[in-house]
Image (cartoon, rainbow, N blue to C red; front, side):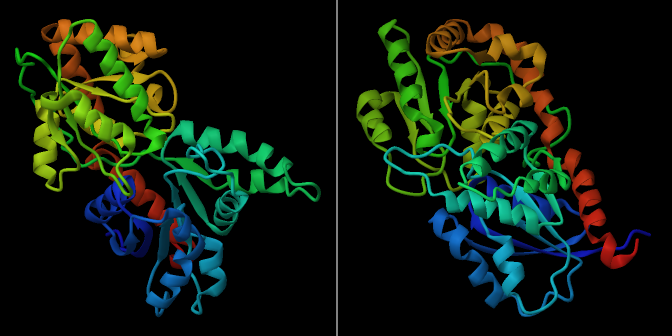
Length: 371
């Protein structure tokens, strides 16, 4: 009989994909996982100081078979300062600060990149949420190190790479062959935005595409979902006035069931992101029956089966507008595509990935348990 192991999960940014991952892993693993968290705000201060918070919350690590955390905590700081012996550690990289785009007006602070490096070196195992993310990190790491004027520690590339693997995050939906209702004859169709209201999701390009559709005399309804951790971006404030009655939902929906109901009502989900390492929100929308329109870059070509790339991945703004107009004019034609893409997303259900995660946790704990 397999031994049930015990892990501590320290999550310094408990919101969005970080929250989904932590709660999903805890809820589906056959092992016992205890979760300590900090609220999802001030991510820069989390990278600087979350370790100092958690070392005062953890009195003794001796009872755990392993420690799990994510990239927004300095694991090297935690391991250096915690008083009790630290069990083997696993870090899940949702994002990294070597390749993450800068906000408008922001200047690069290289210390965040070095925190990623020292966290990677301090970890016993590292998981990236996509191959795209993994490759971008290791493509960017040598150039980041070369910015040092001398004594460049190029050895860290191989040292970190040796303990990495790619493992997609689980998603909170069923893994079965769930039948979807046929696309309704709803006119106009409902377009979904269910991403964070932040600069890296590039809402300006999204709204510019909608403006181009209106200029062509086509209509749509709009549900602007997704979390917003700071002030409402100006693009969304302008959109509320610009689209008026076309907006059926404006703002984050707290209820999970209400959120899913909006996705089920949706016909089209669009991403114009400039940064996306996986895309849980897009996967959820596709699973619920939305036909996606996604840039043909970032992690999207990885999560969409190749046979559908020509249908749903766009090259540029012009191609996005053309594909969007085609969907608005011909929503009934995309019923089969909707079902096939929804079924394709089932591979990301927690039920279908949890065994791999449990294998990782068992391997992590093996040095302690002499398995």
